[in-house]
Amino acid sequence: MTASRPTQLDHYRLLGRSGLRVSPLCLGTMTFGEGWGFGATPEVCRHQVDAYAARGGNFIDTANNYTNGQSETILGQILLGRRERFVLATKYTLNTVATDPNAGGNHRKSMVRSLETSLKRLGTDYIDLFYVHIWEYRTPVAEVMRALDDLVRSGKVLYIGVSDTAAWKIAQANTLAELRGWSPFIALQGEYSLIERDVEREWTPMARELGLGLIPWGALNGGVLTGKYNPIDAAHADDTRRNRGEGLDDRKRAISIAVQEVARELGRSPAQVALNWLAAQPVVTSVLLGARKAEQLLDTLDCLSFTLEPEHLARLEAVSRVPLGFPHGMLTSPGVGQLIDGQAVVEWPQRPHPAD
Image (cartoon, rainbow, N blue to C red; front, top):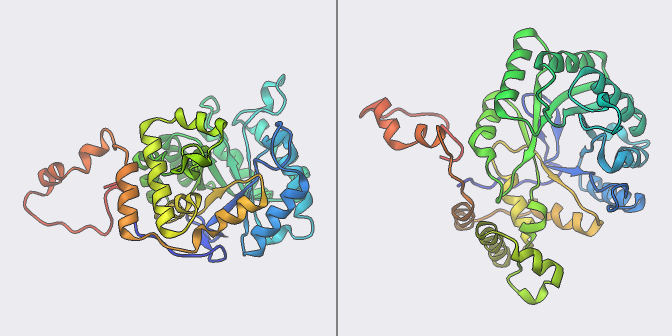
């Protein structure tokens, strides 16, 4: 169980082992534009950015492939004249030209090509945080880290991050960067929510040890944690949502119900409860938010304005906990601790594992 960290959008946090200040909620822009057949119009996107900025939000996330490039283009237009106020993050790796094998991947050509395109779309001459979007295991790690360091030295990128990559590969990359004097990853982005807690096995301990700021995506698990697919009051579910709710497994259904019950007791929305829990996790620097409508964003921004009581935290922890698996479950067990320490009491300044 983790104690909540009451805060607000303009109470900034340092990102990883750096001096960069970012808001505890990051505005995601995967829905900016309608290039994928869904999403928000430029006008709605502007309303979202304005609402976020009005409360002091300063951290905005996009990627080279979001809505086929529309996201970066729209965002660049919205930030015209105020770009310096924001910490702007984008990503590379995913292919943007299906017939060109070099238009995607982690390699240097893909990296440079993607960055130059992103700079033009966003109307800026540098990116605050540049992510490797997905690790594809074919480009040597030394090539990736050296090429990223070159971009930092050029001034076109200030900091680098990594997303959707195995913990061992991230640790390898940062160790190599440290040994060779290259720029290390300071940010880590991946799926994390009350429903998806697998990151607690490897990622969160790694993030703490290596000084990586964790930025979760999928915080509402595709809407499941809003309760719209299995509302406590089933009368409020339309047929489409009811059918999707029937497809939930028992664990997801139980977690969703628990979140809705806590939300009802607190007079909050289920989304606010789920986001509040996530923003309070010790290694989480900023939670990634996405919305198609400005009113949806306004509701989620209010997730920082309250704290969860110990009994609420205990209830959510109990229903959502995941087994650590080998070797973590064994290494953090009382029995192994006794085998190591005998009858001696050895005090430790931090828990050996965040799920312990």
